[in-house]
Length: 201
Length: 70
Image 1 (cartoon, each protein chain N blue to C red):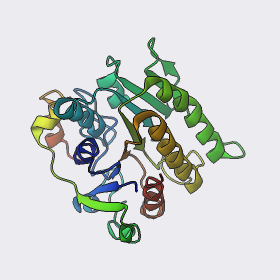
Image 2 (image 1 turned 45 degrees about the vertical axis):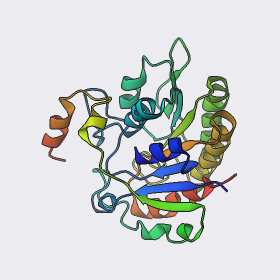
Image 3 (image 1 turned 90 degrees about the vertical axis):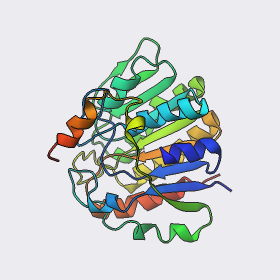
């Protein structure tokens, strides 16, 4: 909430929010998957109430489906929610989208980036949010619990893509919220490099 | 200059993401190099009150989470 607040007031342009527990598996009246409360949905509700910000676009690149977030925003036409996961779905109005993540192949990083860009780039341009949210998990890294064969290159590439998408669609405002991922060595190596990319013009 | 806020609380490194224990054990020290750059600023994440949680969650969720053994 503090990160969203400071973006809304203009004190900062972009944010990276660490977490103590997950958020995207927490729905309106349920929680699980080691998530307690839905940080992203609460931030959206707060920005609407306190600052009149209405339209949000979320890209969820945690390895698992953001079912809690979807539960909360499913009937909200002013939230674009695109989830790269294991499912395929698109709501009738096109604002709720699940796209299967690619698995394996010769270049998993490139395949994942292409999937994310294909799923989100055109949709966010058409949706024109006031604020862009990236739910970033590194659990899809090689050797982590959602292993999709990804390496650091995929996460840095996603950061570059999200900065570009936010610049084009929401004046550069980008809230990045940490999701899944378990290994201390990966967190220590990946997170600072992702944050570094957020400062790009 | 793009200004990037980094939001962190020391409790996240003690017990972060309940599946995996101390995945953030090396933070905030792992941010030291970044924080020498004026574009980055570290903020201490404040506590979120029940009023914020209740903006999106059912009232029953709070005691349910508090009762969870994790």
